[in-house]
Image (tube, rainbow, N blue to C red; front, top):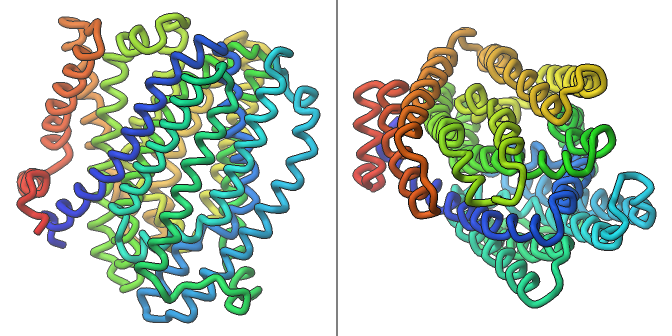
Length: 510
């Protein structure tokens, strides 16, 4: 594989999709302090809670959608256009049916939501409208999700990133105008999310018509057999989503029910950084998925392995920079961002929640192998078992050990670290038919790089603590440049380091 050319393309894709994420995070950075100050940390916690409830609904559609891009993309690359269109149309109509049914079922409980969860009486109406808008956003995102396949099939993820940037700008504009012109309400966040989703849906439909004009959504093109094939293949993905819900989706509810709404709000703020890491993982995965799909469709296992290992290096770099950087500069960041909150508690919660960066950084891109090979049963069972242990651990530590909100963060970090470092790398090696030790040299080097970055950054933070946004920005830039160098020295050989630098400076993109 031509690493320089490949890396040049990857950097271009990461740049455009990364810009979108920066715009989104910039909006969060600006508005979160204002929202928590005007409507309270408790109210802000309901934003994350509403999104978690919407994620529960996504579980129902996961079986149909998990393998949509995989089946459509492989058929398309094999020049089986009619078959690809049958999958495409079937997914669209299936999503329309499922999303509409879920939306209808969700309307009833919304009328007595305050009986299901603890909501301060003064914001009951506000929270109900927020939940309604979040579920409407779920409907839009689900129904039009299949149109996003065109970006992966034609390797136009960079263009997708530009439209994503536009969607986040629309979201930010809506929120800024709403909070500037009207009394502060939580449900404005739902309106902004709706605006962003509509932009994404329209742009995905345009890209489908532009780059894959063979795809249509006529009723005559849909196939119950195709839906059945996708659902049978993806049913384990739905069960896996249940496991993920147990690992990440019940923490705020447990805080709400067993501790307090304030603890839920503090954990929601702390999980903001975790969501940043997850978002960056998705950006990296999106940049590599087109190559994974093409290599697998062409039965080129060696090329697939090379691309997987390349993705591990890039993903590990970003995760290490974030974890080591936040541990060193996180307190300064929170003092500037949310000075009126309990910074010490939120900082500790954040460090615990992103602790999985050490283990997940290099491993995360490998998870797409499960989608490529349609092998979800074993990882699903592992995830569900881990989720059950996680929830039980939370309950015991909250109820009997009196660890409070820290119990929620620690149990998830411990369970996910074991899954990332042991079960998944071993099973992925088994699926690909390669030695069980295939990925561990890269994983070990990544962990060593993370520890090295942590030591260097903590040492630097003892000499200087930034007290302004500009100083913090300069520190982040210096840490990023220095950390990238250290990471590359540890995880890459001499040839790979040269190819990486050539690609970064544009010498390998042509």
